[in-house]
View (tube, rainbow, N blue to C red):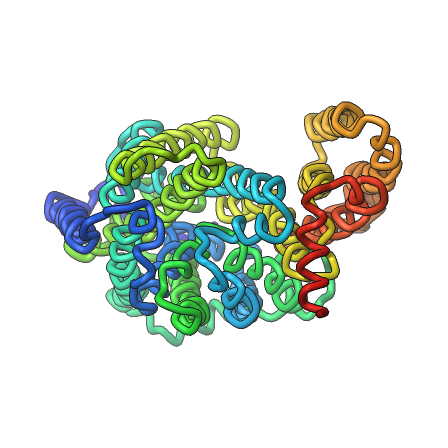
Length: 585
């Protein structure tokens, strides 16, 4: 923090967030609840509950995708990214890859999803590779979704904690309860229409926040030109890095390669996003919904500029009255910078609107994941022939799964807090956690999507496990990580011997090079020079590359493992062969 920051009058600083602010937040919650219930209509079947009858307008679906993507991570954690000493606009470069990925999904993946009525990309995988592959990718999605969205529940709860003073665990369960309520009411229709409203609210809130910071600086005689020139001189406006360095998160190459591949997974194989595309009337509408959701990058850029303005306000502007009351919570956790500014520096009406926007962004994402996780739970029962009740009973069961997953996510958030305790940037934690499973799902989808790679699914769970292990090996270099990798390796060998019997020798031999590579990633150290001193460092890669690494291992191991005797004895392999032959004929 800049040494020239002063604290004159700081001891008298009082919260501007009062009953008027809370009234606005309450009005938003009540209105959104009523609107979602009104738009949900009658949910007669699980098709209505999870697909919206495939009749929703593409603009509402696109708005819902944006609302789910943005979340409180963008509204709060992106400005915090600029707060750090090395923080700048580099995060913006990854948007290039997300746009490329959406276009590819729109023109390559969406048409195959509409060949027959399905509820998820994992059903498509099952149709091409067999039911075992569907179950595996559905499980990976649920694991990654629970981990990734657990961090978003935690972030939202920490905002509520700053504004209300509630204990963190009370705040977590309060956030979870609202997300459950809105998803419970009307399934995907409620989710999409409330998301569309929430999208408009938090876009307005982002613009309002930027305007308020600029006006607050203007009150103290600081012009926008001074803000921009100071930020430029400090490197805060730098965004394009041409270095080809796999260790860096935010380079041009990470954007066009890693972010593009990761976005194929996010918008093409992640049920959280793809479920919305299934609600459109046809391929054309679904394609437009996916591609036009690229507008989200504009919101992200606005939030980055909010971060620049807050950095200048608290660290460079020498604003009278800025002192420990504000600076201590921000020093404790950089993600507090926006909530603290709202609490102490924003007019009560504007503060209420902005907090409503943050909550809109947060809960819209949570609604989406609850609907997607519940859908996967129901789909597993439906395809197993165990969903035999009436339509009304099936919808009750769907709502039961919404509640169950809501409790699970809230519990996950509490667990994250116990382990994490606010160390580091939560946005990078969330994105890295999702990367553990995203590559395995995308790799399996490519095995199903590309006819020449289809070889069944009997050994794919072993390939998926190695995919996750490879990402874990390069992401964490602690004692528990190494112990986990050793235990998982032994378990894979034992399970292969038990499951494949005499055929296991070939599979185990094929796994050995992959296992060796994984331990190399985790144990290898290289020498680097830091301030003139040689330092031993672990081999690492930036989190945008996690999905690419996992996908590569999944595809390579999937093709190698599903060959020879194992593939010949796999009934699911006939699915792929018959489809390839029929196309050739």
